[in-house]
Image (cartoon, rainbow, N blue to C red; front, side):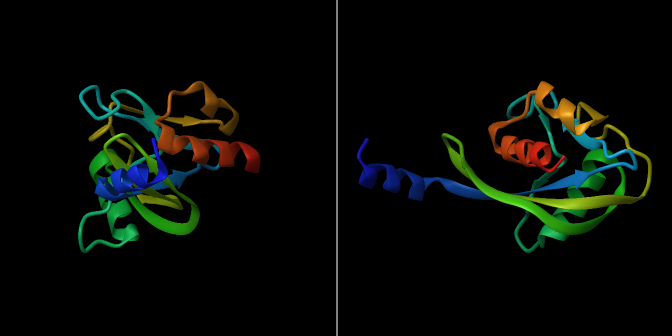
Amino acid sequence: MNQARKSQQQEKKRTVRVVAALLQDEKGRVLITQRKPRAFMPLKWEFPGGKVEPGETDDQALAREIKEELGVAIDVGDHYIDLLHEYPDFIIDFHVYRCSINAGELECLGVNDFRWVDTNELESFDFPPADEPTVKQLLADS
């Protein structure tokens, strides 16, 4: 496919801003969540978060998504990684932030499952392509 045509196709794709929380416990384990069976990319594991709605900041979207999915309140910290990932029908503008839980107990409200895993175990889970750079960065940092 020539470059001009590829560029035109990219322009037609919608870009979705997505935020995710990098939550680590006192042992350094990372919280990952599993998508529901009927979700886009069903049963894949991911860093919890979701779409930023119009008028929301990244912090507001992350706090809302984590409360809806896991029933806990969080503090959003430093930016960890960001990237663009192109899927066949849309582009993800993906931003990951270090976060900490400040209230509540984890529950599977909007996810199929959740787990605290050691960083070196992350590669054994099936992540969507947009999450893979975060996994690689965590492995490099550990």
